[in-house]
Length: 187
Image (cartoon, rainbow, N blue to C red; front, side):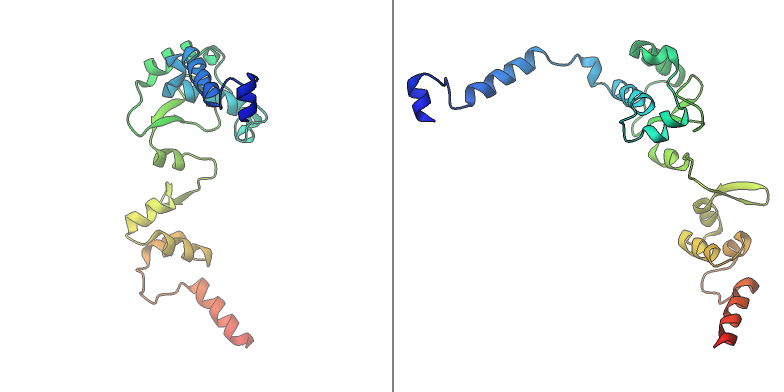
């Protein structure tokens, strides 16, 4: 209020507070280490593994995923990780090789987002001729759309039929044909 300024109860219109806040923040700026990528990763790992209020705790700490005891000290974590897997390549982030093991030596790597998506607990592998792959990989090898293969599997086709039948060929596997004839007889 203008009267507060005139009476000396207030020293400014609010700009002085902003200026002082900026100066205080400059004076106590975070150390450069806390602004590094590796520090943020380490901090997030600790949150996921030990803070029960963290949204991701149920996927990490509650499952027994822990941070290697020596690595609770950031300097040791940074030293060991860089020595083991090197500096971070562009577009890569830390990934656990085995999802059922914790953040321990020998279980970390730099991985792309695509690799990390494929390395999840919910990722399902399909086996054909003794070889396991993701459905999207099988579809790509067979030169069939991924969703076409998925749809075929959903209605009862075997993986071999779903991959080996060209799209639009009109071929319907026996298992599916029986279902259609059963429906026609019921009408």
